[in-house]
Length: 580
Image 1 (cartoon, helix red, strand yellow):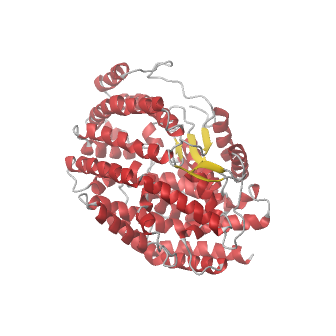
Image 2: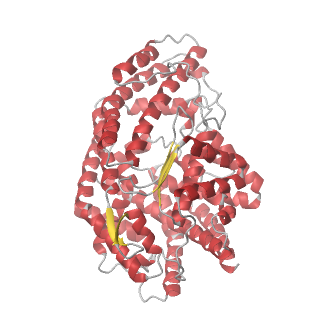
């Protein structure tokens, strides 16, 4: 087995050590060998799963690097072509063969004998994929994947020109321009806000058209599979065995009742502290006491080194996880023109050491993003020695538990970034307040996605009306949007998940609740809290979701009562900070 912190991938057993491919013709014999191999015993079947996992890990990593390189430079047409080559010529063949291999496994008389490790969970998911497979959906999926990448190219090309530090005009990414929204000078904030929104408006019609194309294709996939709508299809495709759309609706209502009043309170306090007659959208990120924005780091290298130190203080192994990624060059952290928006930790299934991508400038949110993605990275590394690739790929509700918990577990070590006690207190308060803001935004995006696909024939006006109705349900009543209504109508277009990973958003809400529970345990008993966190991560996806949460000593629960109890805890922590 590979050492968890090794830079080397495991020795290949099924593939040749130097195997590479240039076309499907190079891969097909390997899939044929698996498809035609006799399976005379449970041991044969187990080894077949291991060999299949090795091949799929190799292919997954090959695809990962194509995606990573493309998002690091969306302007490079050769990188886009390499990505599309896989999507158009490898993925369809692979998908068809995967279904054949799934059937071979399920039809084996020895399948029931594989009842240890994570096999029951993997087999459950495999059976679900067989149920969902339709040959006619392969070309549709290829079209969808190709269209999804257009979003990153469109968003990555968005820049604005604002006054630079020397007073001269400076072209900058929207991420960098957004830092101006934290400036004490209100005129600077308003100028930046309007510039960002006006730039987004230039592409609003392109993004509307792109979404309409995706919506139509996705609905066809759902209908081909026998579902009434794409939402129902995706609940099956995402393997949501542990909750239903009705549970999501209850989550939405609980958040509206529990969190929105807290948002109103935060907005009113902000308006009063800033001494404003009206609270405007460009006033929502600035420090309420009009202090200069927190700058936890200046460069990407500084961000990484300080994050390593924070992880190291929590547990030396955690620091080593980021050190090994640094040594291997598995990070691209800073924002630049032509880079896709957002941030991610991409598992590299064969090597076992992931890649972190993000768009850091120099603000608190960037710092938290690396802590978050670092939590994902630790999760990738602690599961790298699990037997099958399938055991390593957790549902998002578990993956986000790893990342969101890390944000809170490291809180007591943020003095690495903020040696000034006042700045440290500000940073902690801002982050805890962001939890209060995150849950309503998650509910907004999730409820909107339910509406989008429950109403697949909607027109643009209906979409705007639905978005505004849902947005208003989960936002404060204090912010003044007068004369900015058009900007408000299109806020949803900035959420890349709606375009690229549909229905991947409720997970953030579920995991945020779990993360607060992990942090509460850590507050009460640091050793036990960290132990539970790592215990849950090490399981990968070898247990049902509820058992993984239980391993972290937290319930898999997003009821109104549970949300209220956790928010009371967060509010108590906030009050303690404010009064200190």
